[in-house]
Image (cartoon, rainbow, N blue to C red; front, top):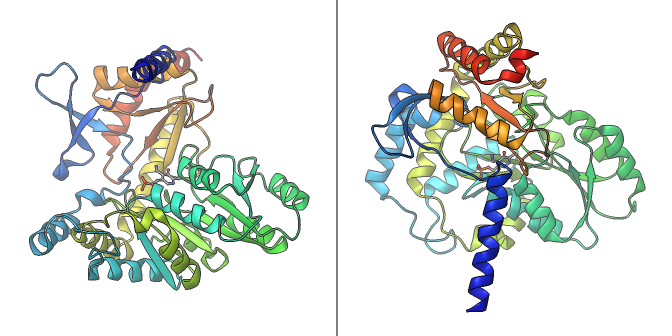
Length: 406
Ligand code: PMP
């Protein structure tokens, strides 16, 4: 009785603090309009008719989740196999769609083997936990901006953790130098950083990994589908795949569906498959989902038009912001963050964009980014038109009084 009251009081107080700090998470109810992406219907909190809006923060970066070939593959596969997998991978939940997809992912990343997970988050958490507990005394060197899913796996492993300043190779080398030369080492990083939009210098990191005898673990979540000759990511673009031990990715963003994976040497991948709780004790993804993913990847590999158009639209968005004198972080990718410091302010700006202008832009607050560096995270897609960009500029000029005054 006392436990329940104390727990509820704690939860209520915590939520009040989050509200007071502008960090309370409201989830806008958004209905994708598959034939008109990036238009959605916003179901407003007070009820009433849903309102048509433009989304500027979708992670379906290429709109592949709405692509006719992907929708058709999903529908056909549901008709053939049903809606769910019906078991864990171990217990009747491995279909030819799963194994076929794993073979295709391995080939895409030029690796001998790949392994599917329910999400990119679980892939990172489970794979890092498994690998970092494989040998005694392991040390993981982690970029300061690494995603929560990597941090989760690293923390749970209990391995030694050294955090290098974001993309700062001199600092990474300093930490490698200080570490016990005999300790087994892993360098964990992302290629495109999700909240900054900048890109890691992969070859320089691999040079250090070789010099200090570390293996490399690369999260390509924000790059898969978007970069490289066949869309496999930054490692493909930079011809660095052969120097990365484990490539991790998602099937939810550039590929537009859901799921995560790792790709690497067969014995490492098989070790994760055989030991990771996040793979063994959970129902596998529906075979129809795997079929939709395969259709999406096939299209991405064969047709570079969407990623070329995405790069062109991202450049157009950045140019428009610069012309309008609006601030932005110096992104090298399709992710375009606009600094709006102050959690409450950032959230209010996002709300005004939605309510006044019918534009959905996600406010990014602590703990996703450090306090004081709150931002709006914009992502162009191949389907954002010049007119949409101009509407966004006018709306930002309206709701960003600080920027307007500058
Ligand atoms: N890694 C990074 C860098 C991410 O930003 C995310 C999610 N946004 C993930 C992993 C997790 O991917 P998923 O959404 O597929 O769980």
